[in-house]
Amino acid sequence: MKPKALLPALFCILLFAYCAARVTLLSMTHDESTTVLMFASKPWGQILANEPPSANNHILNTLLVKLFTLGGLHKVLVRLPNLLAGALFLFFTYRMATEDEKRPAWQLAGLALLAFNPYLLEFFGLARGYGLSLGFQMGSLFFARRYIREPSSGALAWSLLLAVAGAYSNFTLLNYFVALCLALNVMLLRNQRKERRASWLAANGQILLFSLLLLVLLYLPVKANLAAGAFYYGGQKGFFADTFASLTEHFISNRAYLGKHTATICTWATALLAIGAAGRHLWLWLQRRRADSGAFFSFLLGAMALSTIIQHAWLGTPYLTGRTALSFYPLMALAIWELLRATPAWAAWALTALLTANLLANANLVQSQDWWYDRYTESLTRYVAAQRQEGQHIRFGASWLFVPTIQYYRKAWGIGFFIGPNMDREVPTDKYFDYYYLHRDETAKLHPDYVPEKDFGEYRLMKLPPEKKEKPGEE
Image (cartoon, rainbow, N blue to C red; front, side, top):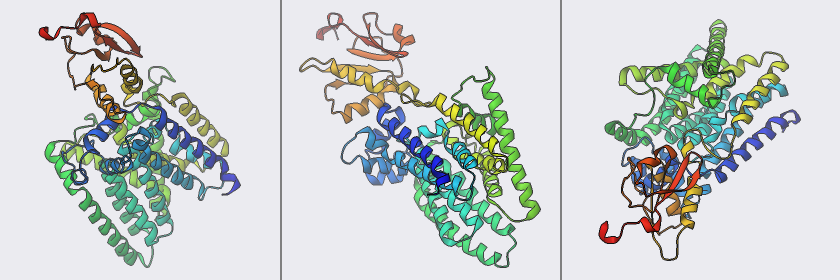
């Protein structure tokens, strides 16, 4: 390792330690628990075929969760595949930022642009396919850049293979795979080389091979989801409002740094910077007819955006938003970095300082942005289990949002004395449960005999006193 690259390496180690800490400290969440209980519990064949169909079944993630938890359901084992994907992401981010950039300031700025995203980092500590897909995507981008600069069958094969793995981890990366194939073709055709036709044919032979592999892997799962109407998550406003704005809002965790219009200001500023960077890269490429990595990343970003817009117009597919749009982030960051790295070192230090400040303001070891409501579910379940008297069964109810995670801990910890909870979409008005967990604003909907037992943030555990319980003949 070059001495000048030690600082980015140190930051990568710190970021990985942060992700690992979140793996061990955060409560399991709704979608993770659903992955374990509903998908990873199925036979291998059903997982591969996506039976029953669900867009929440991120197939490679589910397969790895099933494999890693053969010896037990500890949450660290459940989340380990995505933590390893985080290591992969950071490794290729480090390589991307330091391989041909010699100035320490812009090495660190490149790393910061790609990895100092608190929302993105969350998914390396959660058992969902997003972390896996991001790790594979970054590897794919690294090898694609290498191929654009110095074509070789090995670099192209690795880029395509990792793109296939990313799409198998999360279907949203199908857009990336298609855009990657298109971008590679355009770059090859535009480059003025005597061997252009031969290299184009060889490259497309590999592209066809990996496209067929992806078709074999995804045909049945995607067909099942389409038939079931499972692709419903997303937005309807437009690419800018749903995809771009949501990424910016999550990046700053909706903090009002600049007042109530912070999100709008940051969204437009980032959009102008990204569009300006991409436009400049593509314009320079058209002028000199030789592709560089900035032009490649910019074309790839534009192709992905156009792909989602066309899908929405022709098929009615929702626009990607929030976590489903994360595949756009590395490309935006790379396009911006490739533009700004031509500026003085002070600009790099200023950019790194801003990104570091935002990361420190939003980093936490207690909850995730998308499943904030599960912050206390682990401690809640442990508390209720501790209230058991010898030989007693506890009737435990909860609002539906918390049920999968409670059921996960019930199974992982071997709690056999809980009766419930059920997926209650409405707060029950009878006196069936010994304990009921819900938002504090909804406690009045319970039977008036329930009394507060313990608060968990904005949520409350309610208890039915023993003397208020209905006698067996009254039930």
